[in-house]
Image 1 (cartoon, rainbow, N blue to C red):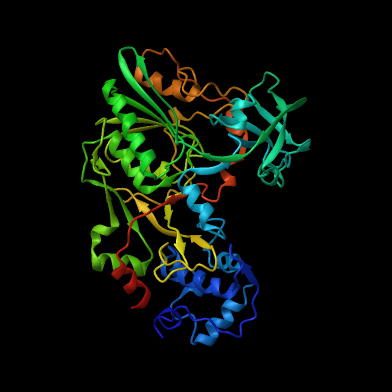
Image 2: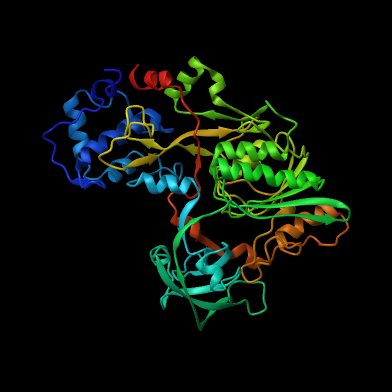
Length: 499
């Protein structure tokens, strides 16, 4: 048979041996019913379908064989993971959740947070002890009211030393107390003698529901007569409200006659493709209608798009947001501050703008995520409408990879600055975000200024060798995600599923 899924849509064998899950109404649904959704969704949309033998259209020769296969997985998560192509090297970013309501809140910027956004580091790749450092603090949160500040170091939670194995569990709790420490570099540039000294100081923190505005900082500097806009943007949260606010911020830049922009994406893990297009169109404005990026899906969907309408595979620069004209700056150059925490939609902006304007990247190499995902629900066409009310499982598999207008993609190892602009953050001397003397921003100003007011210096050894192993963003299921909310025509979905 060519397409077993056309024969087994919604088919469940009643004699399955199952484990059960409960929804909010205490109704039970079998694991194999959810497994059916998982396999069909991955079979239809997964980017790397052609590389996974168990997703082949002719994998099963009968409904019974398909049923027996599903029944070998006691949990949907196990089936999902078995279908991932090269988890450690190729697909590091697909995931499944058992509560899509919480997921949808995350996409809207609603999180549970104590306001302390942190990174995790260790002095050697062989160390098991790790330490936290505060990157920034969200306003009107427990951390802000308790006086937590950027650069604070903590070695433990509730008097337990942080390790590679426990830091996610300890910092994932609703309430906890951080044990503060101090960083010592012994006055040398090497990390071999660096250490964190424990103190008796502690800070108690509590999490609460919080809506994070992706704009943390926005200001305009006067640099020797040049107006320089600075935007610290921490997430491509694709909501109508935040996109409108972003357009308003660029109106302020435009009114101030800003002719340079420093875009701070150092802690931005990504988000909405549409918002990445919007931001890039605000930075430019002279390329409306030109190709921003193109999409490459699995072979079946790619062919279906090309047969239906190749334009569906193209994302173009825009000149409006929900009908409101964009306050574009028409820049020919943009400075982008990056670290390894800059991912997905952040990288999409850099890669897609590079063929059009001078993108001056400053900092360190980005994460390396060029693929996008989409939320798949258990409904006939995998959309939110008509989702099975008996459970709240949803998947976020990779469905396409992005290419810029020149076809550049597959930057698995990330996007790197020019060697002259490589500058790592120094954990023991982070500087104040948005301050002209903060090292990464100062580097950009040095280039704009040209007078040497902020001289360019090479990063110290410690800035290169400290091993950053994670961050508070890693606790979120959409960490480093780039997602699309592009509407796929129903008729095209039907052809993909049933032809």
